[in-house]
Length: 171
Image (cartoon, rainbow, N blue to C red):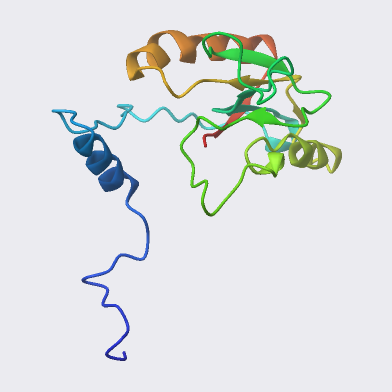
C-alpha cells in the first residue's frame, strides 16, 4: 500500500448512515440520539409457492405527482395511499425526501418504482404478475404511526390485490 493510500483503519469505504443520521440530529439540537426502527423478531415467511406464481407489489416512499402544482407537490398533508400501477406514472414527487441530490437524481423512475422491470419479469414467467396498484408511504411519520396505522393499511391493500411478495423501495 502506498503512503498516500487511505488506511482501512482510518477511512471507511462506505457511508455509515446510522452515524450520519445521529450526527445530523445532534447538530440540530435533538437531545436524544436517533433511534432506528427495529422489528423483533424479524418477520420473514418462507414463500408457500414458487416466485413464478407470485404477484409482486411495490411500496415506495415517493408520493404521487400533483399535476395541479407546478412543482408536483402533494395537495395537503402527504398520506399513505394506493395508486394505480397502470399506466405507470411518468414521475413521482421526491423533492422533499432525503437522497443525495448533489450526485444523483430521481429522473429514472424505474430506479425507485421498478414496475416496468417487474412487468418484463412477469412476461418472461419469472414472477406470476405485478399488483394492479403500488403503495406510497410518507417518511415523515413516526415509527409508531407506520407500525400501527400505515403498515396494517398497506397489508390490507396487498391482501385486496392478492399480493404475495412486496418490494420495499425507500428513497
